[in-house]
Amino acid sequence: MFLQFNSSTTLEKTSKNSKAKMPKWETDSPAMVGGNGVYSYYRNSYYQRKMVGVLKERINEVIATKVDFSYIPLASNTFHLADLGCSVGPNTFYHFHDLIEAIKQKYQLQGFASHMPEFQVFFNDQAMNDFNTLFTSLTQERQYFAAGVPGSFYDRLFPNSSLHFVHCSMSLHWLSKVPEELLDENSHAWNKGRVHYANAPNEVVNAYSSQFAKAMENFLNARSEELLTGGMMIIVTLGIPSGMPFSELPNSLLFECMTLSLLNMVKEGLISEAQVDSFNLPFYTVSPGEMTKLIERNACFSIERMELTDPAPWLDGPVNMREWVVHVRAAMEELFSKHFGREIVGEIFDRLIKELTDHSHQLESKYKEKTLLFIALKRKRFSSKST
Ligand SMILES: C[S@@+](CC[C@H](N)C(=O)[O-])C[C@H]1O[C@@H](n2cnc3c(N)ncnc32)[C@H](O)[C@@H]1O
Picture 1: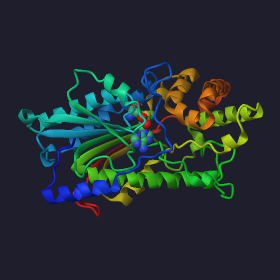
Picture 2: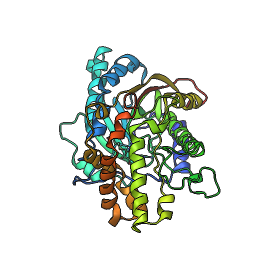
Picture 3: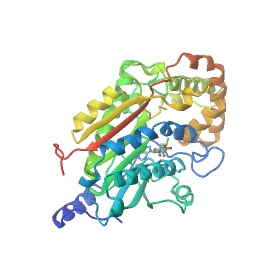
Picture 4: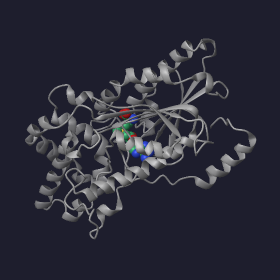
């Protein structure tokens, strides 16, 4: 499926390595709701699209000023891009339309208009993602060849030095795994009666942050092998100003209302206390300071740009709780369904709308401005992990 860029010696090494290390791709984070029904991600991912939409100018600027195509080798005149955590669409299609336009413009600016490459986009998500919906909605008018790559982006997904550009939006806050200590009654990080680290003791917060650090280490190690020197990676993820407690963000209200709904259901005998105690959301919101340390520790990427920006949906006026919960459901239904049972999921989300509506006044005091983290990284030429 892939073009091989390396010498024959490396080719042999690469194929041996990939055989030996082929991952099992198990994660605690299930895929988004597939298909295009009322609760599908396809129909309920407008918030995510708007968030990345506000960054279009910044992404174009990074491509125009930070990428130098004269130094990036192309095999068979093909430019390889990957979307990590693409889901079922349609957001990924909008992102790649814009990205390829910006890359073409840069080629023209660098005087390579007559040598415009062909574009190959690899759509990656977990194996359980609804790739059928994704590929049946690909438009004929697209300017790239498309391929699907199943598997966790916390593992290797592509051959050595085979990618020119990586994009990963609204996906990296999903941890591959919930920290084990949260389930251990004997640990100070036992997360009884909560579903997240929002308003939790430091031990719980630290368990999440260590888990995120491990996940990022895997993510960056894998990408450092896969990206060519000079190749770019754009990451857009949920963010928080350094030092700010999570309880100040709008999502803390969401998670608290989830907990309240679940505990009320325990009181009514609809679910058990043990089920709530053993349920934890695999989400982490990172600060620029933390992210910088993790990237510097990896040492394979230069940080071309990193900043917190304003996420549009929060700042566009009053939040419609029903609409918010439908977006949350499209992303989390499988998580709840796996743990509490498919038959009770509708009840959980209906109660969540009510709980959020009852607490909606608390949203006003939450910090909504700089809560989207934009990162542009470039694969360095020399580093401890140079290929
Ligand atoms: C909220 S969606 C974002 C989709 C799309 N990038 C967008 O901007 O709308 C997050 C996606 O990340 C995927 N994801 C989460 N963890 C992943 C992992 N370890 N490997 C690959 N995909 C993952 C989920 O399956 C989901 O499709």
